[in-house]
Image (cartoon, one colour):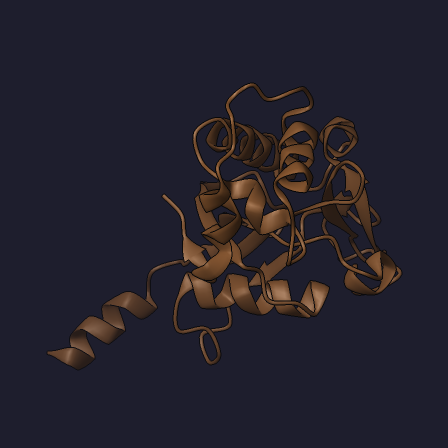
Length: 207
């Protein structure tokens, strides 16, 4: 029976499966990490900027989140205190190599002491978030980035997510400033001291 099932599955054309991560930090302004795609005749969208990510490795990645965490570590060298699944994008046209689906996440990391080093390579760059949205990104990453920025700014209105963007320790005025940077405007709701302790639970799953 198992052999019959395996044989049936082997005859099914499978889509390409990737994980992409919108990695946000505050470096005077809200920024997102972009990676330049390799140049090459066989590369899709050669030389175009894209969100960091890559193929799921079935030998190394037990889950989609494990793949996202691996990619985050490879690209920035840091463990994000906050990682949230954003959604899935897939169709027959998003990747010229064939039918593909990507599972997108967004991550928040405190401002790195050395942004160039945290970018991972010379082919990566921390770009102001709204400027990045105006760029012609590879695949459908422009749509994914827009959804990530909207999700982040929406949740900032009723959560203490910006605490994950603050290097520890931080003060309430510093946290208030990060709120304003993320929203792109002033914030009227008062912050409480409990917001400063939000990061005690590391790598919280989002919903």
